Amino acid sequence: MEKLLGKVLVIDDEDQFRIALTKVISKHGYEATPFPSAFAALDYLKDHHEEIDITVVDMKMDGMDGIEFITRINELYPTIVPIMVTAYSSIDTAVNSIKHGAFDFISKPFSPEQILYALQKSMTRRSLLVQNKKLKAEAERSLKILGQEKSKIHTVVQCMANPLIVLNSSLEIVLYNPYFENIDINHRIKLFTKITDYDSEFINQIKTLVNSMIENKTLTMIQKEFQIEEKFFQATCAAVITDHEIEGYCVVLNDITKLKEVENLKNQFVSMVAHEIKAPISASLGYIYLILDGYITDRDKILEKLGRCKERSETLLEMVNDLLQISRHQTNRLNLEIKPVNIREKIENALEFYAQEMKKKNLELAKEFSGANCEILADDKSLDMILNNLISNAIKYTPEGGKVSVSYTNDGDYGAIAVKDSGYGIRKEDMPRLFTEFFRCKTKETSKISGTGLGLSVVKKFVTAQKGTVTVDSEYQKGSVFTVRLPLSREQRTENRE
Image (cartoon, rainbow, N blue to C red; front, side):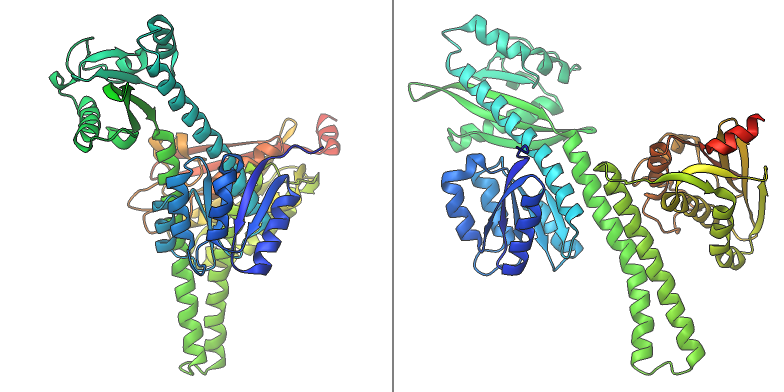
């Protein structure tokens, strides 16, 4: 029997979409339960919330919409991970969804791969939330028997992976673990001293949290997120109660820096992609409106404008393809077909494709091939993508009148493809992050060059998947050389040895 990956609620008032999405999710190892409204889903969750992992909810619905549903879910069942889907996609709706607690945001229409990848990420998030809940519950249980089994509690607290501090009703420090002591090493604390005696940015955040509980006279847990320098923390404060009396306060800290980085990266990426998409779409629509409204009637000019629309559409398609390639690699769905490929033909075709762009920038082209039979082992489609990315980058990052060189040589059992340019080059401090997803070198020369920062990441992943390597040699303001080495075909290796 196939292992159940998770349990998902699908909430959408559009029958056809709800049924189709439920089938796709169920087909890939999840148990999916459909609901036509948010109210119906909430009623179901009253008795089944502990077994549900994820909710996939449409933003625009009659009655209760997706935003209100997600807000309720986060309040009532904080370990359930919500995913927002909508056909009314925009930067504002994406930011608003995430602000109200959506873990992921997907625009309709979307592919099965997109929703499955979102579910995979959400299950990881779900595991972290459940684990965090267990840690907090363990801390609470430990506090209740603090007076009866001090030695056992001390051992548990010392071994907790999360920083923890316990105060009595007079706000004196009665217990803390090594993780708490090490988190603020510039301000050492001592047992049975008042926390109000200390003045550091870190301690002040805890004092604010505890004071909030005292002022509001609340017996329930409260949480607060705060930032100290480059780190983010989530502090949870709970009252220690004996015979209905507050005996003190327990504060457990969780380092959420990585989660914040992912959240920030997601927000930046949504904003960046929206910007990159908006410009070519706006330009294309402008040309189309001019033609449709009759402002342009000359056939040659119409063809010229349509040609520009085509170029911008191809740029958008390239961006989408890069994103899909990244997604496929992360979910191990590359489906590479490795076979002998004539690399010379591939390079010639790629250069022919970019000939017009090079001509526009008045770039000098040099190419060199060593060996009569330039045959390597590679996946045909991904090799095109690798060459297109490297040559396109060389053209984009080389100023007018510069030079681009493409060469191929046999290097032992590998074929080496080198793409060299006389462009802006790469700073030393940028080199370690060059093949990182979404990273772009930001200099005054490159600030106006469009891109998503995905191309080199895609190149690296596909070259590595084909048992090859990619290296870069660059000098700032002088140019760069990217070299891809892929295995030679068996015939080529034999020929070289002879």
